[in-house]
Length: 348
Figure (cartoon, rainbow, N blue to C red):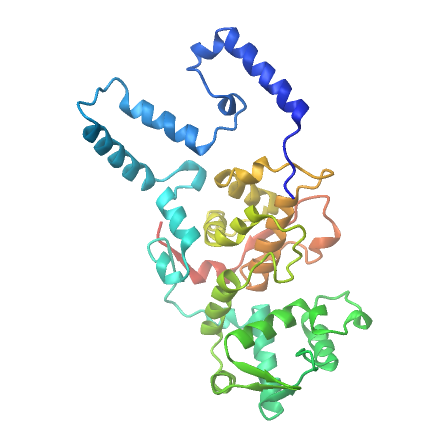
């Protein structure tokens, strides 16, 4: 649930605002709204003031003339860069939020034309899928699975030994879900129709056989990127999703905007808090969510979903320390990788 504002604090703020008006200072300051007085103006308030400033002393001769002015103003406003969006326009932000294919974002970002397969081959998910495809081929294009449709324990433990960071305990690795990357890779292979699970066998499809025979790390990475960005629900697909809050969908929907923010730092070491603050400036609803027992859930969700899972799994960032989760007293430092720099061509 979203925790509402502290009513006692709100009453105190309202009283201060009333005194501010009665003192006459508000009139001298241009009669700011309550939210502006609190340094939390909303988008509608800001837009209204911009329209008022643009009109100035102008008098319209007809309703049609006024509407024509407003239409022109809105068009200019929607297509001009905004400071809160780091130079992107509202129209570009809407394009990002509504895009269902990278090709729809060509005017903002595209995949660079230079080959990046060598770097893609080092990405954890790409390496894991390559490993799984080899295992299929070594076993006549089929692997045993459990009646519930999961990879067998022996394969799960082998994957854990190869792909998990040091420090894991093998005795806790029993099910496919105990190795998140393996669970994710299995879902991707199924949804991409590279494999088909029937009964206690998982078999490569003709498309899967082709990929296993002629492995293309570059194209696989692009497919994984779009699958991760668009085809799974970050709040529902096991990505540490408690509690479920509608506004948190914005973290996934605006992933390309967050990558755009990251590009501005040009590979420098920054903290998770730094990027989150940039993000929250563009989406003020995150700044308005109250903390629960001093836990900033929006900030944690952003760091976990977008950075630690999406970006790290796809090899787009690297952390200063691999043991990110053991020390949460300070915001972990990370930077974009060579793959990040090479793969995206920003056109804004």
